Length: 267
Image (tube, rainbow, N blue to C red; front, top):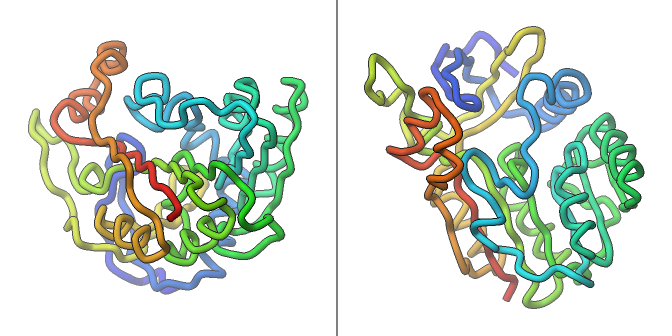
């Protein structure tokens, strides 16, 4: 990756950061991001997990899953296991998880064991075939993880293959308009072009991560191409959750979406 490229501004979480545009190299991106989550990822970015889809959006309000008792569940980017716990405690019949990071897989295993739950866990990039059964799951879901993929269409193709006919795919990520806008002197100011989907590298403390900010239409079109129909999309922040949070991020969320969630069904 060419680290001599252009300096730029990006949003990570609720804050503005300095970034460097880079050339795309899928292997290097996987290595950088797996190392990030193997080491300081949770310390730097925390963990987003059900019942929350991200900042100011919750499953308890949206009810996208509905009844999950007896359903087979696969999580893309299982992180530390809290989302699998949430669904396991609601009597899902099978729990599966895949994650790029060996450390996250181990955290999930330990967390679920402490909760009296178990899951089949696989360490692999989400874009690749990795032994997950096809035409098997009632739900595939991803909480703030799909945006890490290096190949969105290929990832959605894999997810479609895992789902039964009429199976449901639910995922959340940072809203792309949020990634362009930052608070500045009591105003919201555009810091980058919404249409710029180029890859960039960010160093936070001693940790480096690599991402791309995709347009909302990129997600929608990729879903359509892989045979999904969108049933619901959520952009609104929950007023009750925002009331318990102060600061610029909550103020920003009152003006524009910071998280989006999509529920899609495999045709």
